[in-house]
Amino acid sequence: MKNPYVKTASSKAITYTEEFRAYFVSEYKAGKTPSEILRICGFDVKALGKQRIDGLSRRFRNMSKREEGFKDTREGSSGRPRTKDLTADEQIARLQHQVKYLKQENEFLKKINFLNKEAQWKYKHNQKKNLK
Image 1: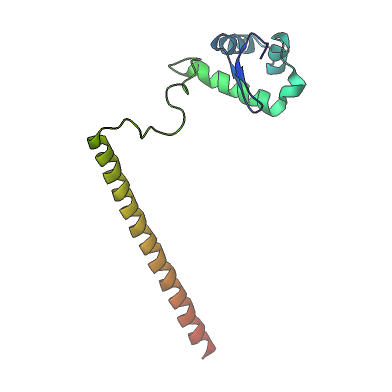
Image 2: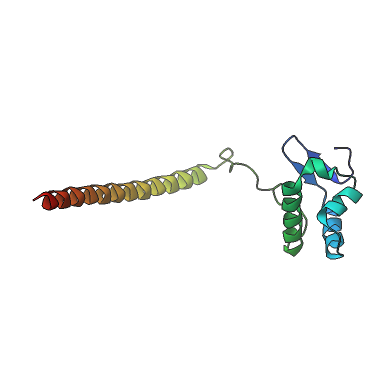
């Protein structure tokens, strides 16, 4: 957390600043290795590990190609969709969609069940033929 390039950190994840992401990609394009860049910026490369370093390197390079750039896009759309503060019409539309989805799912499961029973019947029928 003391590193100026870290926005937030937990035991499972590190969120880097946009400036660091841009700096990382520019240095990478200049020919430096990901580990070298991280070491220069004050990160413990051994603590991060090869897999995390490879992941952040790939992620940062992909971010450089995005329209949003290095901006953290999770801020506006993370977590579950809100169910609070919905109007009555929005709640009705959501529930109608859910009913439609569940009906489709039930039809699919019925078809799978039918096909399974049909396959079992054919298998038993063929077994009886082979015994004769």
